[in-house]
Length: 189
Image (cartoon, rainbow, N blue to C red):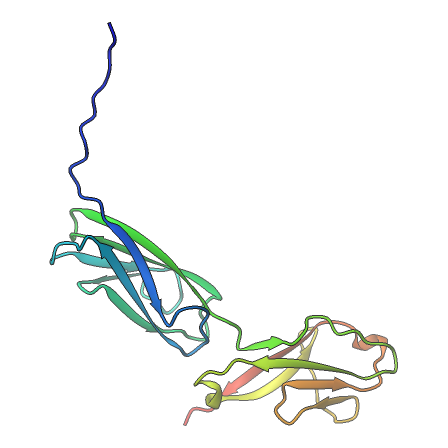
């Protein structure tokens, strides 16, 4: 004779949980982001949404009767961060779990990553700036070589009017290395 085990079906209903983000796609610093936890079929009216992330500036856990949460992406946010929504009844039953990733694009990105240069030639390094409403608050755009501030002397180092380009005149062996650009201040008026 055969011996078997019979398992009864789980009585809990199946819930599909997804998260949508507005705006969609990569965002810039200073952007207000709204995440919405979508649940199908609809959970009971007394369901609670538990929002979590390990992102700085985002509360560790937000318990909300609302399926949405809104926050502003600060300058200290990671380039990529996961946000989680768990739907259930407080301290009793969990219905479902969803996750989404928010991607923050760089405010400043190089046009190319490697610039060919020859000794005694000139080379121009160029960055592009993402358009965002916080640009008007940024000030003191500075160039750095190997992490050290570059003094723009308009002889060997010449910056464009907007500061997004740096021309190195009469390149020497000492000029080969990593260059970066950074806003070092904010206009707070």
